[in-house]
Image (cartoon, rainbow, N blue to C red; front, top):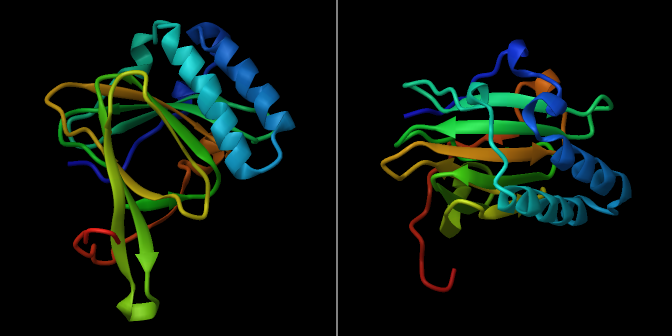
Length: 195
């Protein structure tokens, strides 16, 4: 199972080469006009949902995977660093650690399905625990938006086939290497009805 992704500089290319230029243009306009992180994430989710519904082909180089971890391919980073478009490729059983983000993020399932678990950190210091607050299996075309705070989650491929997802982050992923702010190693409290 994976807990980290990979990326190489050679994966960053012009969106014109990938057929993703329309998505990049839409996100660019959204990022310039949205008022808050939550509003931006919600509007970018609409941009990504439209793109996924149009069924554009994704070049093979963004579908490469690794046996021991999910794979991250940076497709586009905006020159001013305001957003990045990334493809994540997951083999069955691969997953992220529980983590949050440095900025808003939107993900959409291009192929296969993703399993997302959301958490809330409750308590303080050594007594703090991660409490599950929801989970979903997202099929092809499903889109999810998050904005800090309240963006703690874990994503995995719990299916028996390849999953490819497109992510748009409000950060320069090429420079940072990731959109992750921090990972959590706190115990996960059992889910309780009504909690």
